[in-house]
Image (cartoon, rainbow, N blue to C red):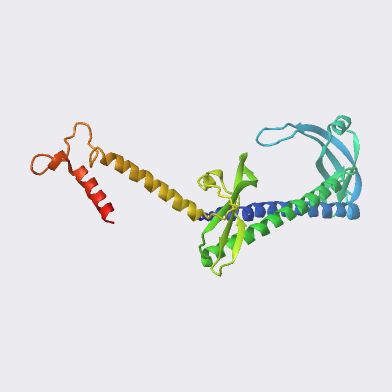
Length: 296
């Protein structure tokens, strides 16, 4: 008795492919933010000009459940460039800085001379954000790349198996928990052994499977005496056949056919009565069976 494990769907096989692709794209986006922040910070350091500005107002943007997750403290300022252009801007500050920056207070502003709309408070820096984005981008992107490569190999192997694979029967060796849990439900994996078309024996294990998939796959461990699973099937068939034969024999002791309540019996003698010696057809069959056994 062998168990042929069903192939998982292609979607299950490509889980890591799509999951890895999402993380890879997310890592690339973070890496892009980090690179952009680094370039911008270098431009501010290399080309930026510092000018005198004045706080014109300050305001608080309250957090909103669906739009803004955090409360932001901002100050608005006005400054004049070296060319005499008046520019207004605003900057995000900490609550402590917001308390100290009153309207009319002088502040230092750093801006790009060829694009004064790009400006910020002089003491502010984006190096921290740029470095964090770079590190996150590299880490998340690397994780996504590994998962994507794993999923790609698994998907390519699945496609090849579906196109060129030969079905073989395997013997289940073990069923145990896998490393994967979905919705707090531990997925299972099946270890098995099979013989290929050249007669070579191999062992393998399945991908993580739902407990519902493996609940009907009975665990069969190798026996020390080398008892094979098909021997168990034959023994089960023999036991089942013996039980059925006993049930038929017990029924034959009473009548050839079970008689439902309220239904007239179909066992009758064509001449209107029982056979000679008061024996019915069932007794005749038992006598014939005994005679055949004596002859043999």
